[in-house]
Length: 478
Image (cartoon, rainbow, N blue to C red; front, top):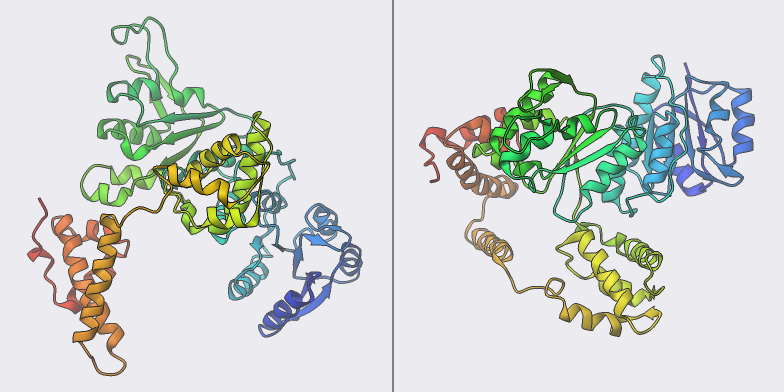
C-alpha cells in the first residue's frame, strides 16, 4: 500500500530535502506551498501523514489546521517552523500535532518520526481544544538549546507528571515552572512558589503541610500549608536540593500517599496539585553522599528539564538584551537601543550569573547610558566597573581543565599504540582513574557509582571487568 504524504512547505530547498529523504524510505510525496492548495489537495486525496510549515504564502498553518483536519481527523500532523519560540511550540502542542520540529531540524529524526506517526495512525489521540495563548511569554530565545527546552515544556502541558527543572542560578527555572503552569491543564488554579532553602528547617513542615491551632507555641490559629494553598494548581518547590533530610522524608511520604496531615492535626487532606521542583545543585552526588533521598529524586524527576547556561546560548543575547531594554522602558527608564557592535560585545561576556545577570546589567545600562543608541564605548566602562562581568583570572575549574589538557598531551606524546587502537587506549587510560574515583566516593557501591557517573550499572560492571578493576579495592574518600 502506498504511503502518501502531504508536504506543505513554501521553502523549495527544504521541501526538496524532505521529499528526497522520505521518498528514499518508501513514502510518496505531494507538495504544495499554500493553505488554499493544501485544502484542495486534502479534499481530493487521502494521506497517511501531513507535514506543514507555519508561515505560508497565504496564512498561518497552525491557525488553519483545525479546518484542514476536519475531513481527516485521524491523519497525524508534524509541524515545522522557523519561528522557534515557546509561543509556536505551545500552539503546535495545542493542535494535537504528532510532533513539532523547529528549523533547522535533524533530518534523520524527522524521518524516524514520520515512520512513528504513520505507525500510530491507527490509534489516534483526541486533539486538545486550541486555547488562546497569553501574551507576554516568560521565556525569550530561539537558540537550539532553548528550542529543546520548549519542546520538553510542551510534552508536559497536558499531563500532571512531576517535573524537575535543573540549571545554574539565574537561568530562569522559575520562569519555566510558570510557563508549565500558565499553558498547562491547571492554568485556572493557583501557582504557589516556595523557596525551600529560605525556610528555617524547623518551619518547613508547617510551611508545606500547615498546622493546627495550638500545635506549637505561637500557633494561635489554623494555618494552611503550601500544598493546600496550591489545590487545583501547581506547587513549585524551588531549591529542593537544599531541603533538610527530615523534611525530604515527610515530602516523600506525602507524594507517595497523595495525602498530608497538618502539624498537630489528625485529619488527612488529599492533595490536588501538580509538583514542579527545581535545583541548581547536582543531586546525584548528593544521593551518593547520603544528603538527598534517592527515592524522592525519582519521585520528583519523572520529567527532568535541563536549562542551559547563558554561555551555551550566545545567539540569544541579542533577543534577551532587546527584551530587557523594552522591559526597562516599560518600568520608566529611558528607551534605549543597542548597536550590532554593542550586542557582539555583550555576547562575548561570560555572564556567570546567566540571564539574571544580563537582565540587571541591561537595566543598569538603560539607566546610566548618556545616549539613546548605545554603542561599545558606553558599555565598556560599565563592564570594567562590574566585579562580576569581566573575564576572571583562571580559577580552580579553569586551572583543572588546563591541567587535564596538559596531562592528555603528555600521555599522547608518551604512548603510541598501534594504528586504529589509539582511541580505545586513551579511553581506557581515562576511565580507570575516573571509575576508581567514583567507587571511592561511594564506598565501593557500584549502583551509586554508576549513578554518579551517569551510566548504566551493567555498563560499569562490564568496563570494570574489562579494565581489571576490583571495586572492593577502591579506597573510600573521607
